[in-house]
Structure formats: structure tokens, C-alpha cells
Length: 293
Image 1 (cartoon, rainbow, N blue to C red):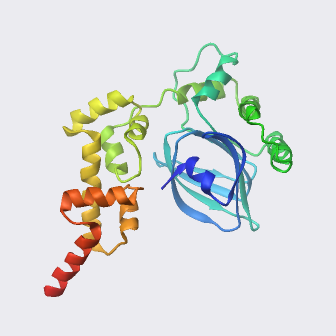
Image 2: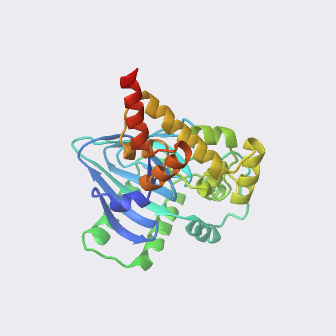
């Protein structure tokens, strides 16, 4: 599982066009497929596929297929499993990551005074549109190939993209969609936590995914589990670690990752507190017991 866009900044297959913190315009290029890549989106993202295909399965079991020259807008706080599939030898996409401040800026200049209370889709997708392809090609020509790196242009280019999309969808559809992004729906805490306790997320991330403020999440969590989110996560993750070690031998790094710890040293420390041995010591003692038996 990767946290994006943060992890993408370290990816050798990704080029940064413009960036200010986690607001960014990036390109990703591949000559080999990447499949079953699990990701958590921490910023809203608009992806324009310029070559190949992208297949996405969301937390809610929705399937999204984005073909060449198509666009998809995915809100932050979403888990998904993605396949990036080259066709004719390559995959390429242009990615726009941004936060709520740009949405508020767009809506402030929108002509819409009231927003729909009806159900809004969980993502927005556009088919192939020549205008959007021309926008992408022009942006790459000016900003990537000529190495323009003026950060003040970053929000302007993303706002330009939003305005272009607004002219391509039915009236008010984008404004309704954007407005709803700032009002994430509530999800059942038990269902959310049981499915995702082994992901390397912070308590704040779980709160957002559940559609609650941090204080509401902590309060509702204690109602369900009669403990704190931190303690429950620690217990469940270490419980899974012991279960995995009973089934097969794993490296400590792999084991930590499998149960939601990105910091291996911290995982070793927590494991030793619970079990009284480090993971390596525990695995060695398990092997010795098996030999004796």
C-alpha cells in the first residue's frame, strides 16, 4: 500500500512538473504493467491517461476503467487497487493533486448559489475529449520540456483544468461534485476498521475515511470498542503478526509492512513489548520448538 502523492515524489518513473508541498502536477510513464497496486489518496487527484489504460477498484467495490485520453477525478481519502497497463509498449498519465483550498477557490467564483442535496457520484469520469488532450499536451510542452518551474502558476493551472472540466459536463454537475467532497459521508467504524486496520494509516486518516472529525471518531470508536483507536490498532496489528508467523516465515521488514507498520524499528519495539521477544527471537524459538517436537 502506498500513500499518494507523497510516495510518487520518490518514484523514478514519475516526473514533477510543478509542486508546492503535496499540491502537484506530475507525469508517470511505464513500459511494463504495474498490477494490484494498493494506494491511499491523501489529496484529490485528476488523472488524464495519455497512453495505455488504468483500471481501479475502490473501497466500495466500484470498478473504473480509464482508457487513453480519458480523465478521472478521484477524491481524497479513498482506498483503491490500481492496474497501470501499457498498450503499444507504454503507459503515461498526467496527474493533478490538490486540496480543499483550490476547491473553495473554484466554488467561490462559480455561478452556482445552491448545491444539490441528491446523491453525488463517488468519482467523476470524462470520455476522450480533444480539448482535454490539447490542454495536457500544451502543459507538458511548456512546463516539462522547457523546464518552467514557477510555483505561483501551479494553482492557476489546476483551476484552469477545473474550469475546462466544468465546461464539458452538464450544468452544475462539477460544482455539486466538488461541494460534496468537503462533506465526506459517514461510514460504519467497525466495517472500516476491520477491513483496514493493517494499513499504515494515522488515526487522522481513519477519522477522515469514516466521515468524522478526529474528536467524533475517537468518541464513536470508544462506544464501539471500549478502548482508544491507538490501543485497538496496536493489539490487532500485533495479533495479525503472530498469526502470520504461525503460518510462515517472513522477514521482519515484510512482517511489519503486512500488519501496517512502515517503521520497522517501531514495530520491533511494539512486538517485544507484547511478546517479550523480538520478532527474530520469536521465530527462532518457534523453529526450535518445532525441531524438539
